[in-house]
Amino acid sequence: MKTRVFLADDHAVLRAGLRMLIDAQPDMEVVGEAADGDEAIEKVKEVRPDIVLLDLAMPHHGLPAVGPIRQALPATRILVLTMHDDPAYLKPVVEAGGSGFIVKTAADSELLTAIRVVAEGRIFINLSVHARVRQAPKPGGEDSMATSFRQLSKREQEVLVLVAQGCTNQEIAGRLKLDIKTIEACLADLMEKLRLHNRGDLLSFFRTL
Image (cartoon, rainbow, N blue to C red; front, side, top):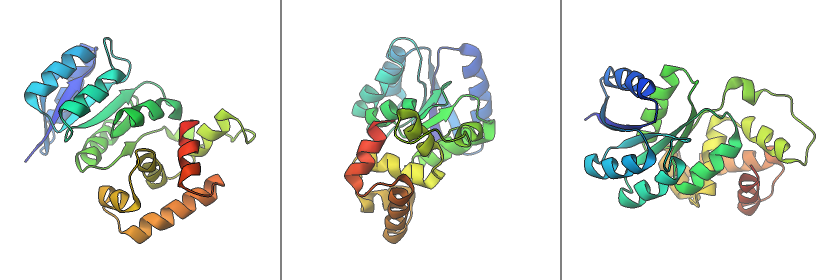
């Protein structure tokens, strides 16, 4: 069965390119499009896709469309597209219930990977390699927090996002298809790397991004 994808972006040319890319894959298909958030909310309810690919800055409720879509269709996953390569833009996506965050400049292959990962119920986060290897600033400031997040591995970022969504260790293990001991070890590594002591500290760290 193919993964059914809905495209929500105000740029018709970008939507056309995404449709061609996605429809060319044997395991996915585009089932609808919208040019703004309000239109996306209405059409998504009709076609009930597996994945909504949503432009963060789209007119008429881009990001605010995430909540209503998730409320109407809890099983539908939302992968947010953005021009902004900054962890600060990830926080509202996670808080709204989004399952993924990818920069529009990412390679086509990475976008397809993101769709497949999110379709499995996992979290996908894309920040450019350039952003991840910026020189770390002095500790203590907000920029230091963002840089620390970029320097986490992809798995560590996934685990942190799921902690921020309120998932238990068992739920995280299920979402990421890993055993509980691997999650516990990842959390321990996360706290050591970020110099934090417990889940409450991880939540506070995430909220400062």
